[in-house]
Image (cartoon, rainbow, N blue to C red):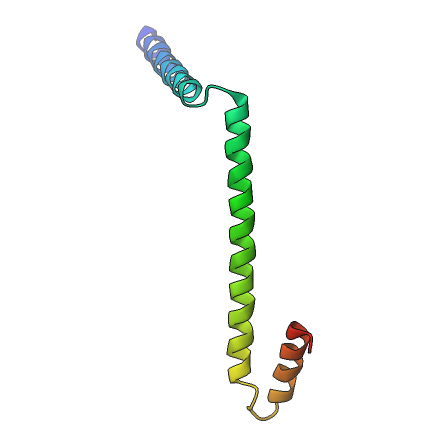
Length: 89
């Protein structure tokens, strides 16, 4: 019974020490909240720009692929309608 309690205390102490070490490392790396906010702001700007750029490339690629199949019988007219609605012609 005492061995289990000692093991539990040792484990809790180790976890507490690890948590404290991580908090100290975080505080050393980010000394001010302004620095953290600025880093998150710039990350958000780049994430938004990357999403916009990726979406644009994906839509352009989709239109290009659909354009390859617009001469097929039966579905060619349907594909032309899709392309026209995406390109607003």
